[in-house]
Length: 165
Image 1: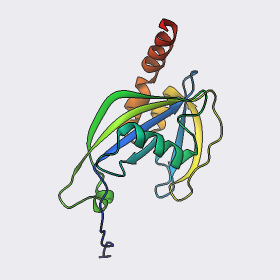
Image 2: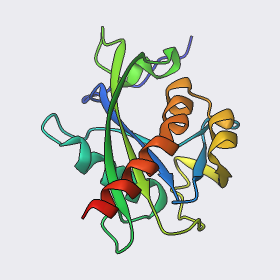
Image 3: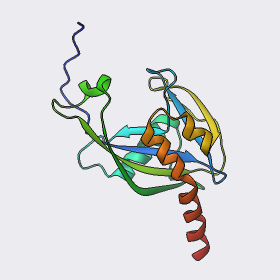
Image 4: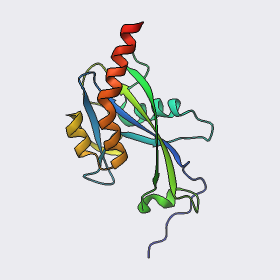
């Protein structure tokens, strides 16, 4: 049995899921480099215990796609949804002993149009834009698929709040 590397720091079991999409409900999915066929939205753990979820969401979007959440025309929205799930067994070694659950906060990042993004090749190997229903079907994770299925309601809410102002 191969010995796992000894970690001096562990991942924090709190993370973000960022559904990157357009107003037309096209969704960006990225394929994990270490798991071909594992399509997902942007995800990542908090870097520090005191890092705000919104800061982590913007940081992860930039690290994984090169997209700046604060660039003109981009809108990062906290969907105020949280998923608590069991950490996949193959990734438990990244967390402190005894940590089995992760809490994931869901965000949307609306960008003006679908475009190629700059993937971090250590993390992701491919990208594609799909209509929201197809994207939900392609997601490996059920919590990611569920978040994508919520997209039409959140985009509708964004349009309504724009018209009120």
